[in-house]
Length: 215
Image (spheres, rainbow, N blue to C red):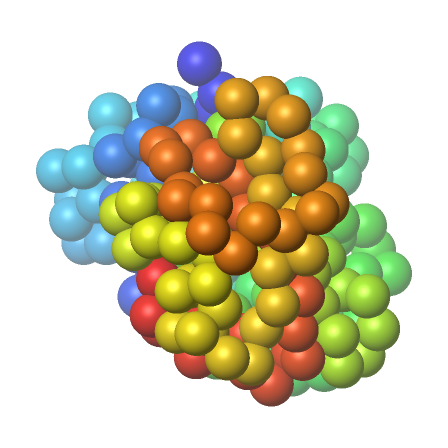
């Protein structure tokens, strides 16, 4: 079972920890606020009150040599920076850190954060989907304005013709789909989407947000 640590249990961190707990993921949640830790303990088995800037404290609760750690400390910039530094020293690999300003984000990147996130720019549910091994949605930047979205067909697409889907999402184009293990670049507008099919959309970044809201 994959283990993901979430450090900082404000609204964003709490949502991430709670959402991950519903998946096949072992969650280690930590904060220096006992009340927040008590609240998240209803959803995760491993919740601790610690000073996350301490390498000893992190190591004692198992936050070392992990593949993914989310640092959701925003307001206390010093604590955020020191926590990321401690996590790097403990050989944690993909450190995903929340930032509240661009300067804060630049510092986190320079000291070893694998990815810096700004909660107002990314929905928590998208982060969760990117963290788990069985990715259901993948977003690829082609340029500053063009993106590719690859996703597993959910109930919003099942049994619909490709022509119907493209009519629903007029600002995006289906450029490929995979069914029964075979990719097709030649789009059949009459093909009806089946369970576990993969769809690949191409479109301008400005339309992606609305697309997510509809799926």
